[in-house]
Image 1 (cartoon, rainbow, N blue to C red):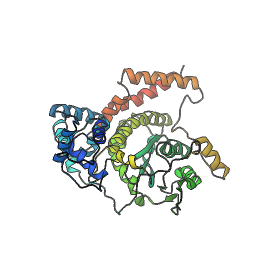
Image 2: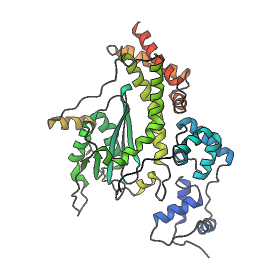
Image 3: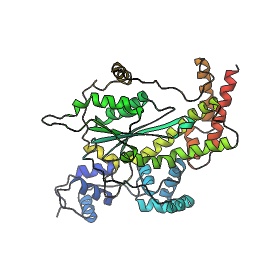
Image 4: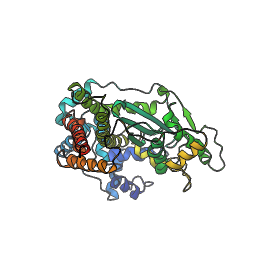
Length: 413
């Protein structure tokens, strides 16, 4: 007798083909959460359904294959990531395995890392209950200045319901126009307008707040009234939805880069009083940070959360307000609107001092020579990132020194 007759076989097949689910257990949990009005069923019942409808699902990786994939991923994102973060990162690469199998693989390929995580299991918890009705209800912004003294600033936006990182950016100095263009506007282009944005009282978010308020009437759906303010400015402790993410970013992106630069200072290879040195740390450090930052985001957005969906899966039922074409101002248009309302904005500027700032031709030559060196001698910026996240700092340090040396060489020509 056919089972689960209400369930569409094509829908189930799509779960496996799209990579949303890789095991029968995952598919069962996903379907039960997606159809709460239907009676719950067991994994065995779903397996019978798969057999009856000739639906195939991916064969699990062997123990050896999974260990090799975990070994490669560890070289790319470091050993700070636990089984959940590792599962998310592997899932972003279309590699699927249970957390238990991943944990066992991590014990084998990175025993030292595993013990360090076990001894440091305390996690920052949300101090207050938080509620968001859907993806698109709240968008939380924040910036991180752990590396600001080296010309590296992190900014990100996080959806309140799912904790999905919608957009993130790295810049030499926090800047209203850059944050609007690369974080706020980019998030709205990808997903639509959020009902409310939440950020601290920093001036760097003023342009994004201004445009959120400027577009507030587009939040109102037909035959409804909207009384919620379009934005809220709160203290950091009340913006915990995004604040807690920084703990992970610092461990996997910020601190390894900072340790490399601090070690250079201690060995008199770098001086914060020399602005040309700081220009080099900003250029090279931002490049390495972008690689590690994106890897972190890929893993975070695809990780499994207990009793909830994978963050990326919430997008399927998002409640964002889709703006008509041409409604969202460009960065230049937004800046002009803000300035016309007596607002003041500063254009993005470099960090430190570029010896070649007066000669664009020499800047172009230096950059070409440097990146050629990075790709041929250092194995590419991704390779430098791999070493840095695994606490091997020599490649990053040598890259900074090489940038300084090439700049001095071109300046002397």
